[in-house]
Length: 224
Image (cartoon, helix red, strand yellow):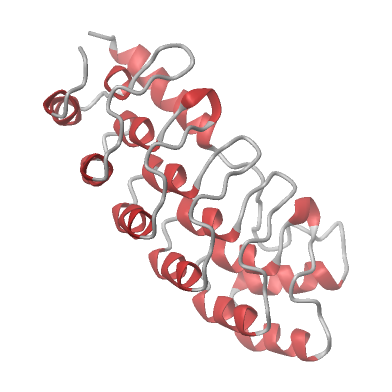
């Protein structure tokens, strides 16, 4: 049995493996880099639909990229601005555009649990299995924080339940490390590999702290 300290360290390490530091869209994040792209991105981030429409009407490029390759669609998605998102999509926003780190609008929405935005993005063919440069997927990001509705939506659209991220981490490991039973069950129901191993040999059972989660994993065939 792993000690509490070791288990808590695993939770931190897995979260860091899945952290997407590629996006920082708080209001004013781009103030040091003024320009049309940043105006649209910041306005989208704040959810100011009318102002977004006005900027687009004046010729703002809906797919312009700001710092680190962030677009207005990513800003709207991260902050759950569905009205703005619909406006941007109607004007031709690229749903699968990537930041310099390979992240997408779908990843931004999943990381923050915005189920309605996730559904809207999936409806216009957002790539459910896109990978960031470190191999993180939208499913991993939704799983690590227990957004079960988002996880199910991704799985229903064909998300790869056994995709490997950095160091071999999977969505199942991410959910297990943080005790998200609903997510765990959804992943197992779609065939998540219960004995998959990270590069150091750790498994979902190894990193699980919650007793019920450990029981579910053993019941599903996890090797003790």
